[in-house]
Figure (spheres, each protein chain N blue to C red):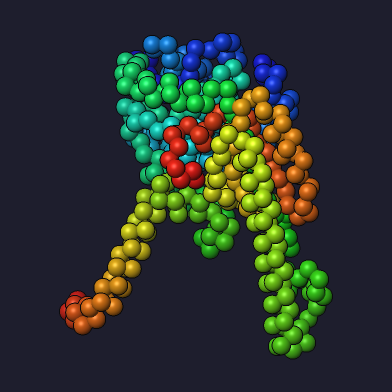
Length: 111
Length: 262
């Protein structure tokens, strides 16, 4: 191996890296360039779902903090949707406070 | 048909040859494509796996993804030994060399600027974990009488409170240690990034990840940096410090956004 002498010996080759370290970098860091083949890594939400299947249940997964992809709006379109939904709910609530009568009537109409 | 072009990285002409037995993505050894003095490191990959539809499908396949990610990282790693590569994100694919050359030409300034910025620097990953605790056993708090049956409802609540408090103390301690360490390492490094904590199912590592950070350090200072990290190991009981690297400067490849995180 041609490890430059400056680098400490045992650390010549990304030592100690686990799969999460590698995926984190190759999927999430590094330069994004739109190639001719257009794939969007943001779309691979299913990956998260699969990871969840590895552990016992969704609740267990949540407990283990397995949602590091899905809660990052930059990484997951699901998170972006959630963000929008949250914002939407917040705005509705505020609107309801501002215009209690009107919102109520509209809700009544809707139901 | 010679297939599609999978691009790993952009770098300057190599001063030393790449490790000879390197196989890249799809088993194709990485090749160097020189354009205007910049090098694109590419593999020729088959359309049946890397055209849009199959690639999208493959990315949902954890085994395929793992193998590809390791191959990608393997090439970046080998490059890091001989040069300072700009790693591209996994799955950057062009139809042919000419498409790739066009892209390189369009981004020439950006590549040169970023290569200058990162020249001679590597990334070190530092993670802090709290050592796993027997959290699964209820009411087993640090100093209390572990496992002792509560005599009354009030006793039970008291034990429960103690256990919660012990847990919170431990957390506070972990956070303090992590932020102190991050401060110390940031002061030494040229730049730093905080990443989201890793989930244990994917990393397969025990304990809870309380710090997941990347530090940009010149090769010349890497040895000292590693020693600095090593000295913190075992400094505080119950905390585990893990070092990975040297990596290509993955976390610093995109221009500074001002936010600095994620």
